[in-house]
Image 1: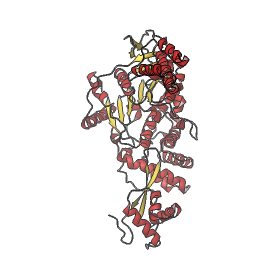
Image 2 (image 1 turned 120 degrees about the vertical axis):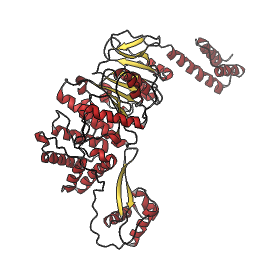
Image 3 (image 1 turned 60 degrees about the vertical axis):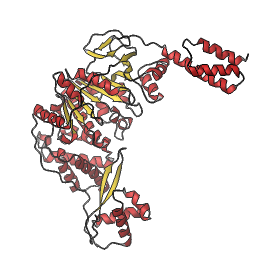
Image 4 (image 1 turned 45 degrees about the vertical axis):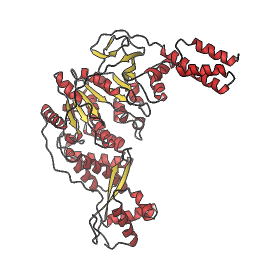
Length: 539
């Protein structure tokens, strides 16, 4: 009998579990054709896979010891409840791919947290967390839902106990990291904010804060580098166009008042860059205020279901150093601020949140690299990481605590929660009105912002168009809403000549440039024809 076939039979007999049907059929076929090397290799591969699965299937995690506390983290596989003393200085990081149960985990934990502690929940896409409002109501608590279109907010208002100079630096940092403001433009923004604050007496304690439109008008009047100024104005004007009236209040919703409430911030429908801007600015305001005030404030739990948006290596290693958020993540641990951060991948995940999270959970991931990276940061052995690859499923996680008795990784089951039906938009609007009453806010809207482009058309020296200009203008009218670079091949000219024609038509008032952000975080210029000049009206 062939030696290879005998060794394969011995390997199959050593397995404690039964072979699957296909492997058994392959062995029978190999018995009839013992010299078939290709078939033997196929059988060996399947037996090796079965051996690895059997090894990791039987790999035990140590059963965690019971600890005194009031927070139910989940259940052990034996059914024993795992009650842990989760402290508000210990951030929690959860890694789980799409469909791995990350949102269900947060629902289960937040239903416990909202009964005792104010929370901020940032919902970027799903509108799922508004269901917690109905669940909290059944428990006798109010969780307000605040959509970004109903959120009066003045980024230029200095948080309580924070020095204006510090807030200027933080605001510039947030704009630079989220809206990609160029370095020279950042200096222009610092100078403009300082001048406006001095003019309105902010450094002397006045509350007469400037609004966003006044900042734009001040920058327009500055005699500085035109390219840098234009790049800055493009970003500020686009944000004004998006937010509109919500940036027209000198005193918007005070962040210090919101810190005492349970609020769900819904950001869906807002561009990703502006979602990041709002979220980063709110967290920066809370962080800096708590660090400046000391440990005398009430606890606050912040939930970021898409935590990689703010905790990325790109922001952590920016041109001017780490962002304010990554720097203060460790500082707020002593200021009763607890972060629940969920991510789908370790790719581009900042080290600051990994090193400052005392509780880590690993769920079902999409790539082997995520298992390895997160497993190593949790202290898992190679065999435990292999076990996770085959056995983790929605609701089943590996947990690692850096405090208490359970310092060894253990398995954790988080049950499915029965969440009430979602709220309607009318109920959400009513919730916002109750929030206004709860924080005692009274609006002081300045005026309705007039959206315009910062580039003022120069006086036309001649209304007569050249043949090249007429051809380019005709192409724009026939192919509306394309990016600037897409018109050159349609007209049959070079990109350099298309850029020159575009500038000439803008100066003569025939075209208007609109900068827009893309879904991938980039920026494009869209050309809009105007009803001006020599009867060249467009439909």
